[in-house]
Amino acid sequence: MLELSHHSITEYRLPSTGELVPLLQIAPSKTDTERLLLVSPELTDVLSAMVNRLRAPNGAIPLVASYDIRERVWNPPMPLLFQRSIGSENRPFTPTAIRKLLINALAATGLTDAGGDPLMFSPHDFRRIFVTDAIMSGLPPHIAQVICGHKSIDTTMGYKAVYPAEAIEAHRAFIARRRTTRPSEEYRTPTDQEWDSFLAHFEKRKVSVGTCARAFGSPCVHEHACVRCSLLRPDPAQRPRLEEIRDNLKARIIEAKREGWLGEVEGLQVSLTGAKDKIAQIDTALQRPTGAVALGMPAFTSLAGRTTSTSPQS
Image (cartoon, one colour):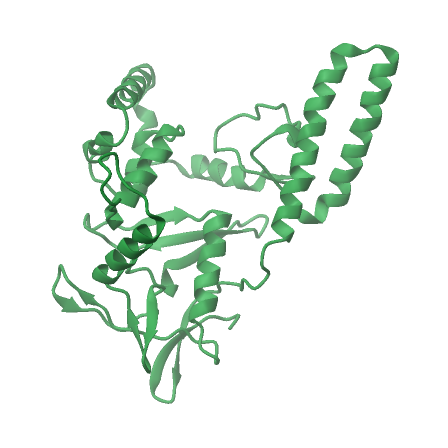
């Protein structure tokens, strides 16, 4: 995490629609592999706030040199996202500094463990918490393995001390049964046609009132009744359309009750609740601070003999 820099933020532009998909490039870690992670809108807001906070008056992000405690070498100056101003210079956050911040934050909460002792966390605990929450929420462990950069699924399963082992074993048995019933050809490098099909999924996410966030290869469980779906990310520009849908549903409910179509009332109520929820999501999003800036793509420039990292939008 401490090695993330402005250069870690990248993007992929869909060739047909031009839509930008934000990505986070994780530099080779302990497994000497590189990972490219899809960035959620919430994480994009956080990264944007960090970049905005670090920018100098000239729009540049200061370059700082960090010490790699494992390789025992100084890394070249980079626009690290985790840096702070100390005196007249910027310095990178160190693992020790992060631990002290965690200790102070936990002490301020007054939280204790089951034995009554002060609650203690290490940075790695959050990695375990993330995997625990993701898997318990339905994320397959082998996908969590890819996200975490583990070479072996057994390493990911080693987090079983945090959550029930039976949940792990049940899913492993499911994966084993699934693989025995599917041809081995499916576990290979995708063809160009398969890759084009994957990209087409992103192109079909756009709907009249926003963007559908369902997973690739999964069907629409609501038969395209988008206002009912929790995976719909409503577009603030479509608020008038949602208000029109809401008012229309209210009128249809009144009509159904008047005509005695009680079998239709329940379904209309579900749709009405969904429409109200989508409008509330838009209102919540519009109330967020608008100080976030475009992340941009970093590039190197020279300012008075000093190299800095800037973006085209600076």
